[in-house]
Image 1 (cartoon, rainbow, N blue to C red):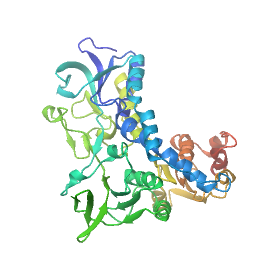
Image 2 (tube, rainbow, N blue to C red):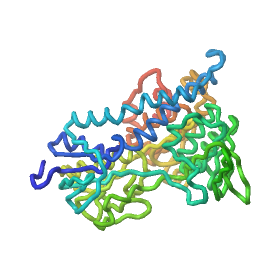
Image 3 (cartoon, helix red, strand yellow):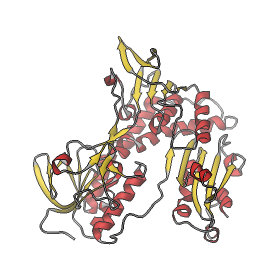
Image 4 (cartoon, rainbow, N blue to C red):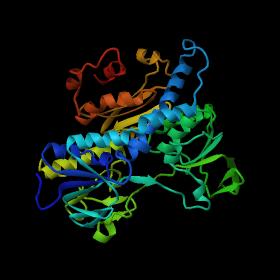
Amino acid sequence: MQNSQYDYDVMFIGAGHASDGASLLVKNGYKVAKIEANRVGGTCANWACNAKVVLDGAVELARTQERLSKIAQGDLKLSWDANMEHKHEVIRPLDKKMEQRFVNAGIDVIRGWATLKDAHTVDIDGKQYTSDKFVIATGLHPNQLDIPGTELGHDSKDFLDLEPLPSRMTIIGSGYISMEFATIANAFGSNVTVMMHGDRALRKFHVPYVDKVIKDLERRGVKFIPNANVSAFSKDDDQYYVEYGDGQKLATDWILDATGRNPNLTGYGLDELGIEYTKHGVTVNDKLQTNIPNIFAAGDVANTDKPKLTPTATHHSNYIAHFIMGDTNAAMKPYIIPTVTFTSPRIAEAGVSIEEAKAHPDQYTLVENDVTGAWFRQITQDKIADQALIFDKDDHLVGATEVSEEAEDFINGLLPAIALKLNREQREQLAPLFPSIMHEGWKNLI
């Protein structure tokens, strides 16, 4: 409840998903504000997840038409310009819509740059506010290679506003952003080359599943250069070059630097307050408190052992809300964070990985299935569909991974069983909708 000593009970520095816990707080009588220097909703809503999925929608349509070409006959022409305009129509209104939703819920939205002045005071563009608690929720920004000509490269935000689509695109890096954007650009006709730091793409995912994605992209014309050792970007008139390897040069029209993302730590007063952090983010304890106990950090900017993904940010923020409200004084419990790469096909996973299960056969049972022959997958003639289910020795489902066009839907459907560690008898009580991909796949769980 509001402490009359301060203007607010809790202020979130950043209005992305790491501030989702604001809703819980305001519903329970706390006075809450979100401070946002750019667009409400943060990176995910405006320059990443949402925008990417909008652009990928046409790719998904094209892939389906390709597999069903005997039925959906004729040439399907994709328009980059029209798809980008569609993306703008969907994404541009989100900032104001979300702000209005928050305001309607009783959350104040304060526009401006936040600089912490002391443990209970923040300066926002020259005006000071006080708060009992603060949550640092400032997220990440794209990494920029420290090489000659780095200013000639572009980042993920640039790609999501890119007009027109260049004939030749070179992508540096082979993680989520690289592989997803390579999939999209290739589908719309760009000649894409991916320069890899090492010899593996999507290193966090099961290698055989990644190989299927790579092989499909190569079949479609995407080129991969492993161990590229990129050393410089250069330009001659309107021609760009990526210098790599042992003095090699690749001519291109546009360069995407997709070499990772770094925590937003500068300019918020962290050094002045002595808030501890590393290159991996703000240092927090098992209750997401910084070394100043009334200041927390959530989401991508927090240095934890969980992946820096939207579900993590939401979970962090909700935990902090419950901690502040006194619902718990315990450390944050272990939790399941699902992840997916929106390539085509997708790879999605949650819980114990295939590699971990294979490394500990005394603890886990691994069940692998090729599900391309499943009747529901035959509807859209899926060519790639493999899944792995991991059970502990008490027969709880503790992990799952799938590569397919519907991987995210299948893994999402398994989350309750994984997170709640449902036993076989409990799983038998669940009968997913029929017909659906979950009903078809559920039989492997019982």
